[in-house]
Every structure is written in structure tokens, then in C-alpha cells.
Image (tube, rainbow, N blue to C red; front, side, top):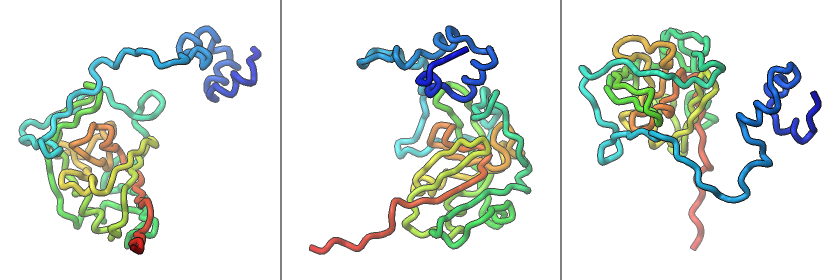
Length: 239
């Protein structure tokens, strides 16, 4: 099969492989994804995604309502891993063996590999919140146990100018959050879910929990945390 150079530049490697093996047919690909030439030349009406985003109930101050522990239960499927087939990445799931790369980029007293032995001395907290994704599922009220992110930030000795943190998951997904958000007392790094180790499909061995954000911001299976700042303090301008 022969395709033009222009067409080849717009196709992914997997699609090109499909062409070469005869698995994909041009007509089928065109039906699945309109060609760039068919893209509207003007803004046109498009239907909104039904049921998206799902309501995220919050307190008036923007925090997440706390639930009684008796309301805790499972999280409904589907689970949104960024992997082929949405499969849970194969990593070390035992929280006692967790290893998280921490890069403070010269803006913290500590950097290197975070282990569970570093978290054990910090105050342990348990909090029960609704986990709600933007879509109706997954969803569930969960009791999380771990440490407050603010206590981890203090342990690392971050300077005040650190602006945000990037948390990276085992599947390559990442989320950037302002440190002011992560220092909220409800934000946790959790290793227990409903008083049991977090199951692999729900983010073992360590999960970021931001209960006043949609669930995809509560990064599963955190493997890396990097801290950034937009720039150092500048001297005041002269009058």
C-alpha cells in the first residue's frame, strides 16, 4: 500500500504499522477519525458530553465535605489508567517498599528517594471523603490513611519560593498543583484505603489525595515528585 508523504506525517507509528500489516484499511481509519482536510473551516455547534462533568459537592470555602467513616466503601469502575488496555502498571505495590523520586531542584533541604521509613515519623491521619471523577464513574466514599502533604513539604525543607509540584504516576500520567493547594490540610499522601493497603488498581503503593478536586487530580501510584518555581525573588523596583 502506498500513502503520500503528507499523509504519513499525520499518522502515528502504530497506525503506520497497521497500514503496513494490512490490519487497518484507509476507509476504516477515515471513518474513525476525520481527516484534517475535513476539519470545519469555521466554528460550528458540537453536542456537549452527556453527564460531564459530574457534580462535585464542596463546602462554601471550597473544601471537601467530610463523611462519617461508616459511609466508606468501594470505588466503582471503570478505572482510568493511561496504559494499553487500561491495565494497572506492574510495579512494587507494597507501601513498605515504596520508592518515590523527589527532585527539589536545589530549593529544598532534602532530595533523592523517598521511602516509607521517611513517612513513618510524620503524624498519621485518616480522613473520609467522596472521590468523584468528572465522568459519573468512578465514584465512592473512601477513608484514606496517610500523611498530610504539608508535613512532607516541611520535612523536605522547601523554600517559600517553591510554587508548584508535579506528581508523576507509574503510568506516566502527571498533574501539576500549586503548593498552596497541596498544603491544604485535607491533601494527603495515602497508603491505606478503608484501613487496608490501597489495592494496585486504585493506586498502590502511594496515592496523592486531593478531595476537593476531581479524582484524576488524586494521582495514583506516585513514583516521582518534582518541585518548581517560576523564578526567584526579585528586588523591589526603585521609585
